[in-house]
Length: 216
Image 1 (cartoon, rainbow, N blue to C red):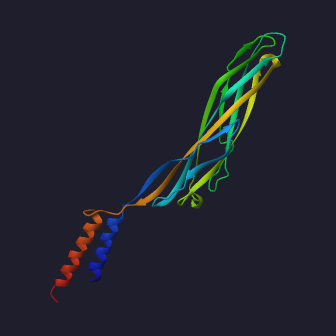
Image 2 (tube, rainbow, N blue to C red):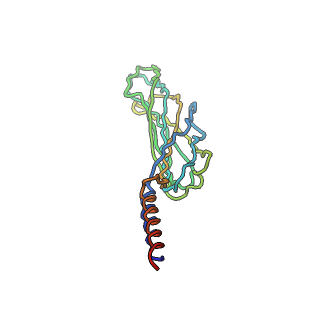
Image 3 (cartoon, rainbow, N blue to C red):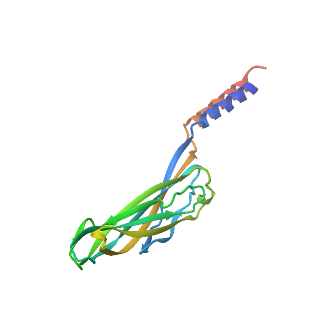
């Protein structure tokens, strides 16, 4: 009886082997908009699926748009340009190592020629950036039926190049941030009739029946 039972257990173990597989699920988070700068939370759904998490990857996307105004305060025509750079800072988030700014988004006027005393505004400018961070060990804050927050903060700076030191400038900006979360987990599927687990169980039942019927 023991040898037959061991055989059945072995067959069942083989049947279950391979039913677990690495699966990914990507969810879209909320969009955060900010006049001038961003300072708030992007809200993301927690992992509520069936399976054992092995990685949480967050991809943060950001955009900056607006205008730059340049003024030539010199007595001669000058050539120069203005560049706005917005650094996107994220976190802190449990389990993630974040080097801020996580990424930067930039727009500029391109090289411009301004006559003495001339002021010119360059509008409709925009730039984008993106970065991904991963967590491979601390998953408690990201599992359940609710949401978790990604704190996002921007800091923008205008840089003027050229102009002979005579260019003055100002900027007007708006920012946008969003994110996607990819959960990697080991999922176990319930086998259907005709799959190896049922075949193994059926074979085991036949073997047990034969053993019980053997002459004593």
